[in-house]
Length: 116
Image (tube, rainbow, N blue to C red; front, side, top):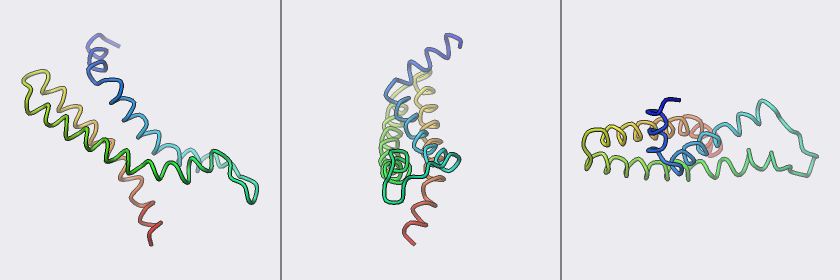
């Protein structure tokens, strides 16, 4: 990585990177569960089954809302900033919208099928 990329990642911030990474892992968990199914005994649930069928769907709306709040805050910061700072916050907003879009594209059909 060049120093420009390193400084850009540092400007992005650890908490924001962790939030976006966890949201993407939340999308990947059920996909990994489909590719590598682990069968539980008839009336028992293993940790993997609970993570992919209970925890991941519960966390999906929480991640979307928290990332949306962070997107709003990055838009506010972009409105107040000039030059390089403004470009940074605009790009952060685009990344957050992309992660929200990926999450919605994955989880909305799940919840539609669940509610019907």
